Image (tube, rainbow, N blue to C red; front, top):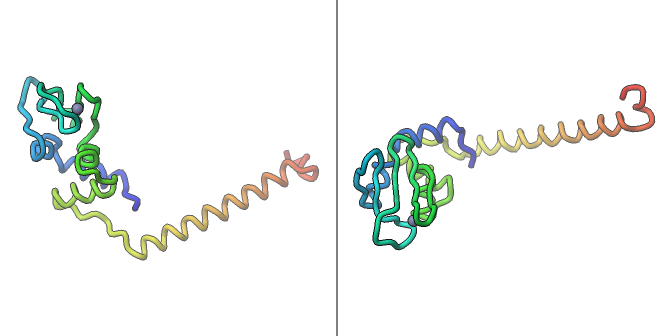
Length: 136
Ligand code: ZN
């Protein structure tokens, strides 16, 4: 399923990373960032850090990191679109349905791309052939 950058940005913007992660990990504000025990490796001193300003998380212990979508992917073991669906639902955002008409448009697009590729190959081969010398 293909999602536009606009809808991905929208989902990201409507799911504050601190809000989302505090639902899974106990994090405390320390300076500009929030820190807590990393959920991706076992540790006793917090090296897991969440930046609200940058909307990113990072673990200095195991190097896990990313944005709110990749947190959900890693924590829930979701694919990108599963994580996107999960977060869209959380923020009451309606994602475009992957319905038949969308698939139809995609098929048509692929066919046109394929035709263009074949045509380009044909013209290119003509151009580099003996007959195409003057054109080249
Ligand atoms: Zn870690």
